[in-house]
Image 1 (cartoon, rainbow, N blue to C red):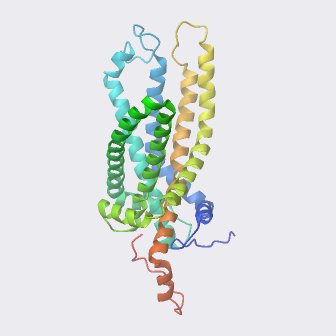
Image 2 (image 1 turned 90 degrees about the horizontal axis):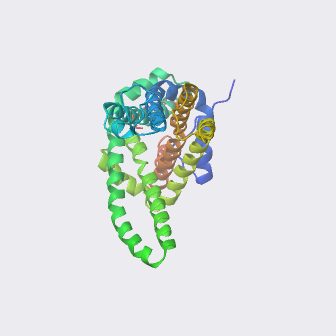
Image 3 (image 1 turned 135 degrees about the vertical axis):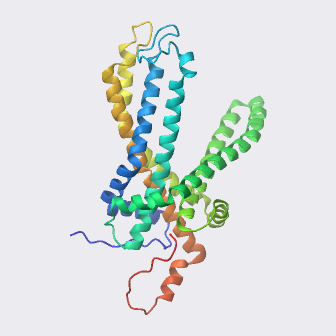
Length: 335
């Protein structure tokens, strides 16, 4: 039987230790956590992937504005398609199901972490995580939605001075424009990744969204780059692994273009292409959403690291329980 050592959350860790503990947590909980993500977050993500795949296939299927569409929807050209109810339903389907899938994924990961600590075991059932997700879905949905609008508003505000600076830079040298654009993307990534810690803060502490932002600013002060590094590296790993499922899709797409290279127009994708493309699209999205646990776990352990660095909660708890006999762990602390 595998030796199980409970991972301590409230602990100071350097960068390599934070990366190591993420993969140790995944190793310990791979079967249970992946099953929870697959059965709880997987269905809405799969439905969203089907909508996305159908949307993409329709775009590729247009050859001429005057030619009919093989999908039988009555849309005669791409202009009519973008004003049709079909397009509206596809966009709504993509946004709604992928949005819900993303919210459930975050709730699953942090709900699983809470149960892991409370039970002191990696034997966690899907029903337990599902119960947590149902009870806390509204809280996570509000956090994700508020996070989205906050980042969008912030980026829009920051883009205004960027456009002015780029206009001046373009008159001097085009290389300066490229430099400022790259700087903007780096800054956007830095801001977005650090703001993502709001998810674990609201999962671990009973605070409102704006109180959580104040808490976030306090915790990441002086640790902005390390927080970005932990989240970005895990996100890169997530993207590389999940991207493997897109390789066959890209190959099929390239073959489709090569097949039509001598034609006067690009024809609709074959039924075989559609079937294979749908399979790999669904696999990619499901794999991607499951691997999203990596940056979520990375930011969670960074959160506990920062709390320990600035407040020494773990040390204080150890001092309070020093000399006491082992007893069942109390679960009145908010995760």
